[in-house]
Length: 312
Image 1 (cartoon, rainbow, N blue to C red):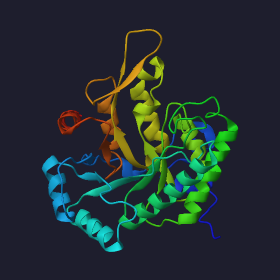
Image 2 (cartoon, rainbow, N blue to C red; image 1 turned 90 degrees about the vertical axis):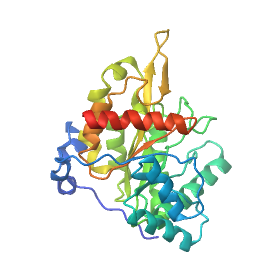
Image 3 (cartoon, rainbow, N blue to C red; image 1 turned 90 degrees about the horizontal axis):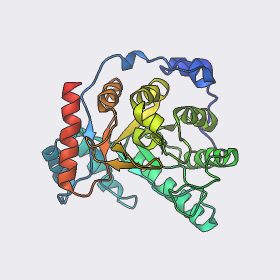
């Protein structure tokens, strides 16, 4: 089986607009020239209004003011349908941000693990067919819950399992237009900026990149109150590899012990001014709203994000 593996050298990172010193452990990655100018916000989110064809899909997105979208078709869609939606998106200047592959590819249950890995392959292939920015999953969990915590999640053995599993998925699909990414998580790798840098180097595939959800990295009062600094570190070290981001918020409650809740953008403590300023340095990187209960909540979230964007 032919692999797209390519040794990542210090020079490669510099040429890719990243200072290799940071990925080799020295701290901060320098911003490339492409990141020095800001770009308009590419906000997206789920759609609740029904549509029957690509043109109807575009109309719904335009009505919501979205310039990015989740993938509108499933992996079993015919090529003609996939191509029709891809053409409609391009014509309307809408970026298909991501294809979800939500599953547990490192599950301790063999059947679950095998099925999850196959799902990742199918969804990565769909992302490549439709030209999405990325296919995204979490790395998984060694516990009973597919996205849950486990004492085995943050171990060297699990890190190596994630590396080998991710390599195999990318090598089997061989994407040429999209990237496979792992969403940041509070209790599974990548659980920090540096662990994501380490994964990039260890997986060592040109088609492995970054999906950034800063809320998922805020797992302590220390990170909560310095999340602007954390966000800047994310973009300093990972910026050139970020293909899509999630827009949420997080709230620290005044009760013992530490209790954090995901909330609608604008109702928590995430430093959105810093988030959007840093995001604007990477042209056409989507910011996708998620996890809200209805269309009205998404409207309020979008209104908040756009308001911060205008002020920032």
